[in-house]
Image (tube, rainbow, N blue to C red; front, top):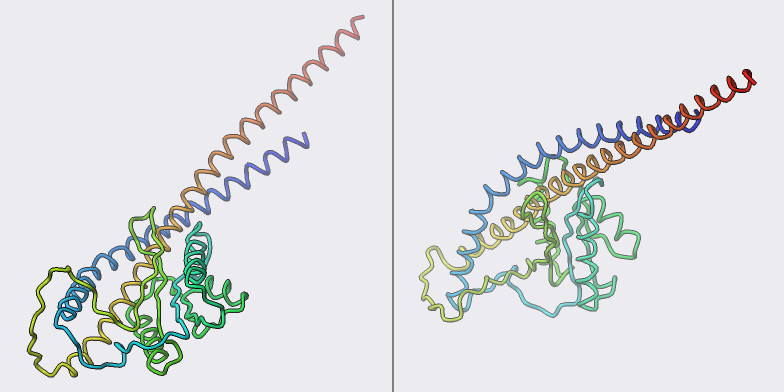
Length: 288
């Protein structure tokens, strides 16, 4: 009977876990739908900005601008976008490993790296391992937006122009679908116009207003667009990973409930059979 009571308690606990994970799955699914709509809506604008920069790169030599400045690289900046909360499977660890592998492949020491962490998970991991955290911001539950992207862009731009970092990379998870998220590393500073086709014709642009004025407006806007798109992709990836993780947890809890129920029924049947055997044995003994 003591074993049966323990089995019933374990089944109740498994059912509670299943109810919680189902509720969290529904919440993540609702947030994912909103985040996915924002990602898909922002992609055409980001793609058009990419094409404009690509066309501009075919104009040949561009005027000097602080965001285009190429210099000897002594210090690297990495913008890492993780989540504030867990329960999203391997989402955060995949990003952490991607950054670690990048640092290892570039043969960098922690002293050469400055981290700008978006999300508590990345901040906690690298903060305990000797890396300099130049900036930390939480990842909003509802997803990062233009306000967060503009603040982060201003910080990154200021660090690069001041010479605190000489090259900046963006590490985030690209949203493919609710089940698949791909960690990627993208260089964002100094800005290099995306390369076009090798046989593309070079254009002789006539700038109106001047090329300097155009770059002064276009380059910060392009940088803001890249950062905003990355944060939107990261938010959608987080909710997709959490929804998938909660779905798997709910399914596993259901399997556990079935196995525990089957085991409990077997134990109860064995206990009943044993009691019947004891009653029959006692009755036979009284007859004898």
